[in-house]
Amino acid sequence: MPGEITLTIDGESVSVPPGTTILEAAQTLGKHIPTICYHEACTANGLCRICVTEVEGGRVLAASCVAQAAEGMKVHTRSERVERSRRTILEMLASAVELGDAPEIEAMLQDYRADAERFPGGERREVPLLDDNPMYVRDYSRCVLCWRCVQVCAEDAQYTYAINFSGRGFETQIATFFDKPLPETTCVFCGQCVGVCPSGALKPKREWLMEQGFKTGEILDMTRGERRKRRNGGAA
Ligand code: SF4
Image (cartoon, rainbow, N blue to C red; front, side):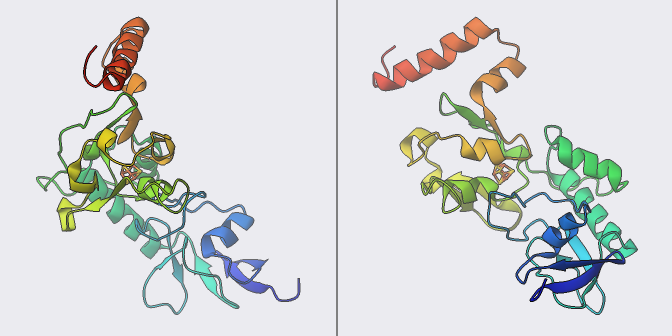
């Protein structure tokens, strides 16, 4: 098509409209590039770097969810350098975060032969589970800081701004303003953050209670009772 950009990905030629990212161009060819922070409903931001690809002549690996395709580009999606980079990212993630509820990331660990024990004895993200509302629980020891929940709570969907990053470096965490309980924030419990969370850090309350061994009737009593209590200002 006139005006299109032609590049090669793993030796295969593809033509795409200007503005197409490397990730999208690869998808056109049916190639899979792993992603964690990327979600098709969210603005891509290249945070997790798992989608890096090697562009011939490039100094650094390019995050394919944000790097745009260019005329004549030669991209490698599974070069040795790319695989090593993805493996290291996964090993670092596994060293710090509980990934037991993140099946897609666990599959990546297998795919890239990542050694989850490569960085033993390092600091782990260990924070108490937050159970402050009838709708969902927050277990940030499982959080991979993909930022999807913050994005859908803000301009990517809901325009509610109930949560954001807080802290710096390893202490960075998703939080409400002043760590207020969710019912005291602007949260409208739309559930979109839970829907996009890839790690199990955000989980519907009923699903979580089921995992704790409660029966359906008990769960309904607990969650409905909790809502009623809140409506009545604390009285059951
Ligand atoms: S809570 Fe879930 S969606 Fe939010 S940043 Fe953490 S992993 Fe991502």
